[in-house]
Length: 134
Image (cartoon, rainbow, N blue to C red; front, side):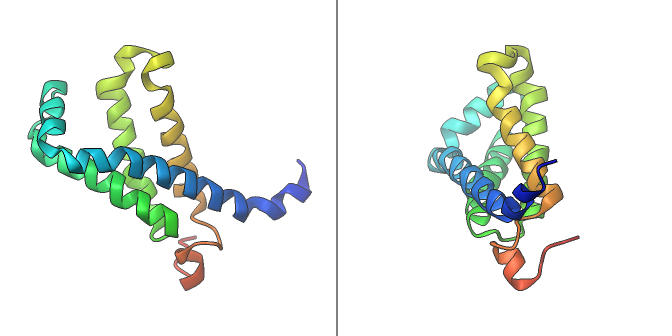
């Protein structure tokens, strides 16, 4: 173990939250913007009712991304992201294989899993208000 690096763990959590938040906003906003088109794709992928699941996924991604940026309810949002991306990988992406398939989703899943277990850190709204769930 490189003990001196532990001093930077809260900065690492901040950077991870920022990166994941930006990625989720970038993927959630187009879904919110074109609910009907995305719902058609969801229906084709086998999600029923497609409009409902499109709305749920778009809300989790977009507003979850915003919550990650400020570190608001980080662990709860991260758990929602974990569940969402487990479903996405198993139901849609797994058949495509790892490369050009589910590798990006797997990375988002593992980053969200880290935030679910570690929390947002001290540089978050959760840390500021003492909402870190330990």
